[in-house]
Image 1 (cartoon, one colour):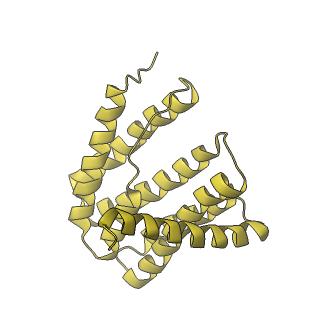
Image 2 (cartoon, one colour):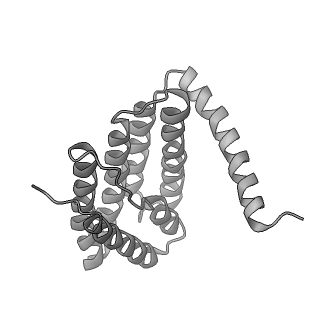
Length: 183
């Protein structure tokens, strides 16, 4: 009888296989990793406009964003075999979607935590990008934007905000711990 770790590994392998087939199909039809990232950006930012007015439209658009976000990395790593700075387009697109959702949330609720995140996310990502591009360090960062998006699907807005605030704060201090300093 397989244990939990073997089951997890089987699910990951199955997911990877299916994701790769779909990513190949997209790539063969002219969708590069950067094009998929930008298409996901379009769906993600558009979803922010419907977050409180038409929740079903938000759900559809944000699910498309999450799916495309999985494809762009698969296309870049497995098909295009990119090793350059293509990750930068993905990071900028992902954070733009998250900030647009936080802005929509803040405009609707005036929650100060959302405003703190709108300020803290770009700062944290600046350290991340600066460290990778200019200091040439292998910097690790927790990217859990899709968790916020899924929590928003279920209308668990406050939980999503607190979750992202916690992970962003941890990222910020983790990067300081990795000694990324501006010089």
